[in-house]
Image 1 (cartoon, rainbow, N blue to C red):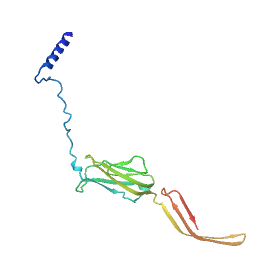
Image 2 (image 1 turned 45 degrees about the horizontal axis):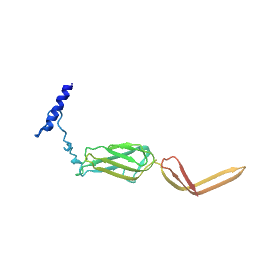
Image 3 (image 1 turned 30 degrees about the vertical axis):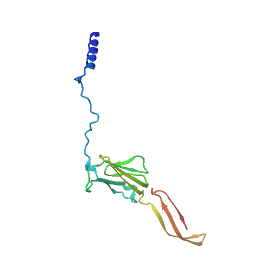
Image 4 (image 1 turned 135 degrees about the vertical axis):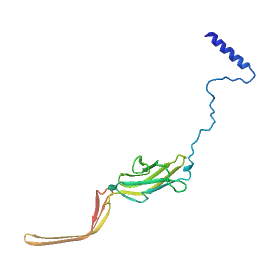
Length: 184
């Protein structure tokens, strides 16, 4: 082994004293770190737009039906593209509520602000915000009207008549379960 090391050392000394170009052959070729990697062409996404069909701002969606979400990415000519990685979020729910083009989801009652986002392969980010979308019971609302109550009876042989006339209004909440109101 001592002879091998001595031989290797003498070769290195001889190579450093040589004034011509010297190269060692064999092994892996050097890596060109400045070479550009092959890039995929995503130019088809240039000028694309995000189109949300449903819901629209200030829409009213009903709890008992599920809520239909529908969007698509259109190319620069307005034609649908083969891209379905659309992320739906609501300020009333943690995390994404749906990922995809169209589907029916079940959301809690409340007034939602949706953020719809498409991260395109060319690096563009398309985003739409829809505000004031109400998810509520079909019976949610303010009910008002005129009330008349007539009572006719007899108490210990004496006829008793009573009448109450007045307005009545009450509010049924977004869940369709609780109400409050006032009468006059």
